[in-house]
Length: 267
Length: 251
Image (cartoon, rainbow over all chains, first blue to last red; front, side, top):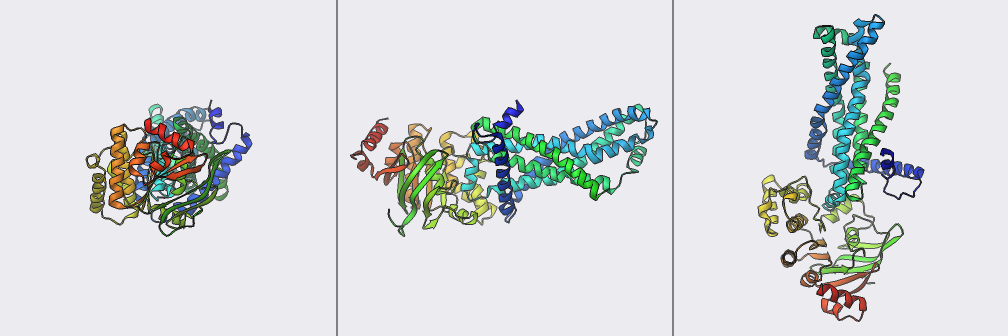
């Protein structure tokens, strides 16, 4: 089902070979990014819309991201405790929980959760505006779509992802402690001191900041898919779905590359 | 083909436009002087709306020239295009109001970006614009809380926000009852008298076209088949023109 929808995303025709559509997509996406780079970030700036998008992307995702981070902390605590007990390494439980969450789980879960919530939201919003001629109306008002709609959303995603990741990390560590202390009571201060004892700059900052790249991917892909939508309500649905699917795929691929780069530069 | 005259607000010369294998416009020529109103008639799918979008640069012609007050639209860079667009008001068939904004915010949208006004002055200007189309009561309403005819009026107020020299209307009365259609027609006439803009109205509504337009043009097979007054077209020897007008008038 999902794959058949992906195939019909491209506005060309069904008869166009999939390989051609694949390269067409990247060609169009490259032009889209080039246009954004040329005109999207030049003054005057759309401050009001940018602040609105910060709220849409950040504040409205906070609860979901926090819950996902908390669930991850609980699951890590339960799963890791059993495994560590087998090797007599139970004292390492706080460190394992903290490191796992900070270095990988927090960032990737935040990226995927936001790609679902915000990616679908931006994709559907812009697609609905496209099929109801609102995008044409903005252009007809001599307003640059890339500056007003795309740059504001992309920048909001880039700025908000690291902050949401910090929130997910915080909820994960706290709930990891709660789950741990329910089976083996341990004071929060001791859990935190023990967990963060071996955490350095290289563990925290690069892993958190890499989510800015996830934000860039979510913003770009969702705006691109939304603005190329066509075909009424079905087109809006396809744009929302493809925004989430493509952004998630690119986030996973980017994560692999970024982890490798981080290991090289921040060993 | 006439050379551009100083009076021409809009000049379209030999414009061709295709979408894939479908040739929508096949050498369109037309000219509208400042203060003149031209109604473009034609069957559905003959490219009337495409022509309007080409004039305001929302789409690009394959070949041909489109000039606004002598300045070429086709191929203009974004800055130049946006300067030209500030001289043009576009009223969309669907009104195309921004559905996440109130009526007031819709009309204020172009003013916020292109007019150096204080918040209070902008609000006053929005109220004046809405009053000019009889919609001052709808200031705080959302687009989904007003009727189709009211949306068209708000769309017209938004198009007038930057005091354009040229107005483009895409099917201004489609989907409206005859009384509301007549009201929209009268509103367009009133605006023409007060503002002396050049207007191009794409419509199926022959009654409204006859009411508001100085000239009518009939688009067929991607070309302007005939241009003239309503009487010229009705009495034309062209069988299609007289048949189209007679059937549309009776309908």
